[in-house]
Length: 334
Image 1 (tube, rainbow, N blue to C red):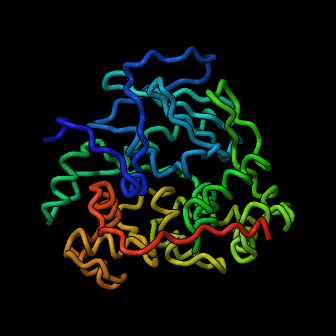
Image 2 (cartoon, rainbow, N blue to C red):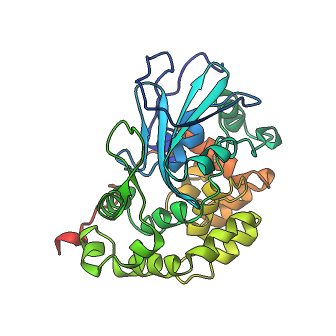
């Protein structure tokens, strides 16, 4: 069945890291020359699935998927800000980069596209996962090599709806970030430097809808930014331990971070409001499963539990809604 149809994106599949990237057959816009690199993956590669988890909402000012089949990312690298454009050309994947961080972004391109990930290690034990794995052959786990760019938005997502968290990320990055270098298709921004995060006044956190607890956690994290970035060279378990030394960063936040910074295939998210029920319903028909039940169900996938959870989300099999959505607050109006 693989390739016979394109599964429709749903709220759940979007959370699983699905971003619609138009077909590469659409003519591409002309771009000013930048540094370039071409890489040939050793198997199928779906840019929307691989890079989708890096997008923090449809209006993320650091991420764009354009009609010409390109994915654009603006990031703060160890060498400075940079913009990366990625697009497929036949079996090749092409990267173009601009700004002081261009060379670093192109050097990391294969890891960003899942070169360090090995999907063959995943052995489906449930029919649903076998079918979804078969239908999504281009799924690879990205490894950005950057900790803070995944940690800060994960902190903003603690204990609130994704709508609130995405709005806070957009507001703060647009106001305190810097314009992305290069011929970006729309106005894009590089997230603020650690020093800039530390100088954001309390009233702007409030206006962005970020409560004092999450703001304080971000401030504690950026004060030790260099030590946290060192964690990218550690195994995922050790990296999570280092992140959790910062007060306010727990298992949920550390897992969400290393899934992106390290491409950690086994970093299953614990403490999530919805994920245990989704996994329980998909694998055992138990919509009321808790974290312990979820971990028992994912036990056969030890070493690949995050990939298994992503495939469940991408399958779209979720329990029917029985209660109103969680209300969206706006502390900025208080």
